Length: 148
Image (cartoon, rainbow, N blue to C red; front, side):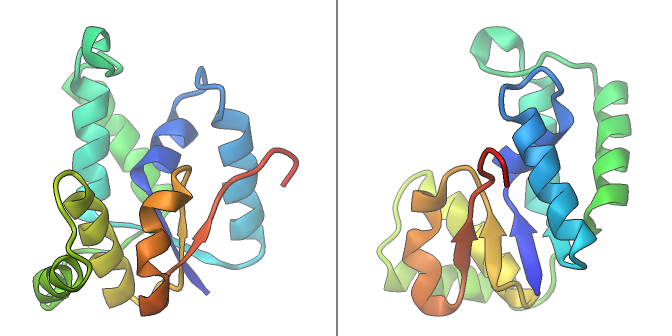
């Protein structure tokens, strides 16, 4: 089984001060111990970089780029890196057109297109409802839960 890891999970995995940190770390560890491949994409790295370097006054972590580079290297050692490949852009367009996706949800559609392109069957996310629309395409949601 291959699982795409959403940006919101990766950010909580990195931030020991986040209230979901322990739950996310436990879930990631459990899945890895079970031999499940957990993957991230270039978009996840871009989104992590954005949130980490954005000032805390606008819902960021306010970190300096050299520290963020170190964090990115750490997550690339933890999760499989699923690089962009031919066909993801076409799959994204197909999904947004078929599902009439608008606005900020186009980013989740790109995550879904990349995950499907890499053979993922699940997405690990804290926002399962954002990925509900992709079930008919073979992408199920998983959410870290306390005690899991």
